Length: 408
Image 1 (cartoon, rainbow, N blue to C red):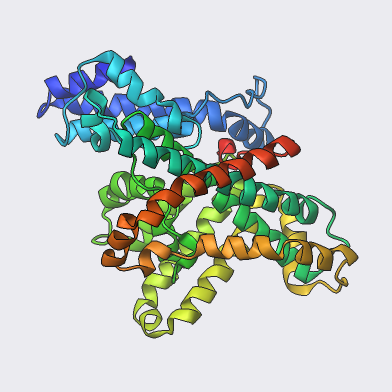
Image 2 (spheres, rainbow, N blue to C red):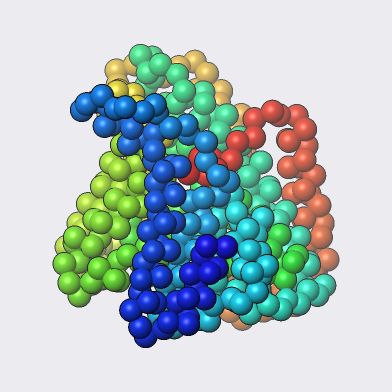
């Protein structure tokens, strides 16, 4: 209700100082709430190292979805201030936008200007229902059949002491975490997009085959697209973008991106790591453009997989030990490692197939011909049923079903 009221005031006072005061007040209040709830304990812990504090450490309880709807509200307020959209007059419609259950817990970050027409009026037909069910089944399959299986291997190789971990096992474990993170989050996004279609909402894509990227910058144009676009439009460009102090702007954006993911220094280090990589790629942009595509793809995958270690370990002591194992472990490969590889051969093939950007390989004419094919039309429901059946089977037989991005 606070932000609903502030937006109406911004629109009423547009072009005057009152509008700037209202939008600034709204943004400060929302960011202050996010900092208090998400980073209060982190700030307390760090300040207590310097001097005793007269109050106890805040709890880590977070309002559901606060990281996502805070950014949604900020984008809404700024867009109203810039005159790119009109403030929503109906408080129930505004409440619906903020609290849409499909994406509330783990995104994508939906901007009001992208769905403003749908907030006021939606249409649902058999085609959108069919597309929504298909997309939901795909997301559930990716989450349960790929991400959860990878998660079991992650726990086996990363949630252990590193005294006996070989270099091969260390790289295998962190690769499995890279797979789990992608299919967990993209699976959730697919389910959110599919569920939204059932209600007449059309959300923008949040992932576009990131593991097919040929540079770190290309990777993050494909990964968590809604977050990247938010920081680009509301932080990077206002700071000056490519025109003024570009390297500084890149580093600020990536430090904020890292801190957004969690209240821990490892996330700040993760953001700094990617800020440095982005700057290096900008410096050597012409050289990289002449490098063979296969080499660019391989170097990108190595840098991304390595970064997952910084993302995974919040304890710097464990991170140091693990990185040492990645490059200089003398431990022999464990007996069960070969067994894990053999038992998951077909699963590895499935992972690779899902990482290939088939929609970028096919031409537009091929896609049209495929969707018009009668066999394709009849096979889609059967494929949905198979994915739903396999996912349900694994869910029934397993108690391991975490959603990684609910932590962030």
